[in-house]
Image (tube, rainbow, N blue to C red):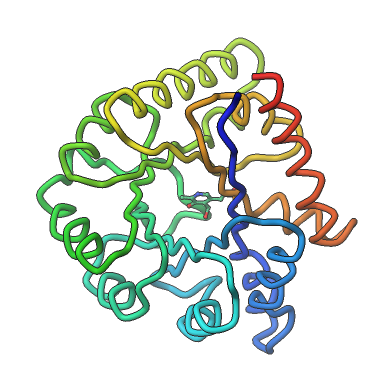
Length: 245
Ligand code: PXP
């Protein structure tokens, strides 16, 4: 029997729309409550240095008002470490962050930044926060994540989502190989970035991936069909693919 596959709903882009006008609407915390009612397993939010989507007050409210576990995406900076240690969310996903990027462009270079990351992973872990590292699907990054002592990795699916044809098949193979290797070395494996109805199936079918984090596409679809319906359809696409795996 296949392992369950969790869905973490990233609500950042509800906040992006709110921030476009500066007022309180639409409220990302309301979206998180709705996601919980629609069957999400967790909420993901990325507190960026420039606060372009989720802001500090949103994190306070997500922790206080939403029953689902929060996965806080964050850069490995002193500021973010202090915030995460203050809130102690269920999980923290360390991501690379560039001020000028539109979205998280690639995975964290865990192998290259080992010395810098080690204290972040240790302090978060000691505070009871489940640390995951957002990485490209490469064995060297998985080995470095394992050596750092992080219990979880999240594989960046962006290259797979953007590729087409033969190239997309190769990217899918890279994800499947990395996910199998993660399990072999004792890392829990998540995946996300850029996933939509049309490309989630093959990733959901990779049996050693146990969580997908999806945001931008769901928030966009919510404009047309409502967030609850978008989440329900994503869940059923994930479930159908998983059942056939
Ligand atoms: N996982 C991580 C680590 C991310 O940084 C993001 C984007 O914030 C996502 C998942 C979700 O990506 P998308 O919004 O493209 O679905």
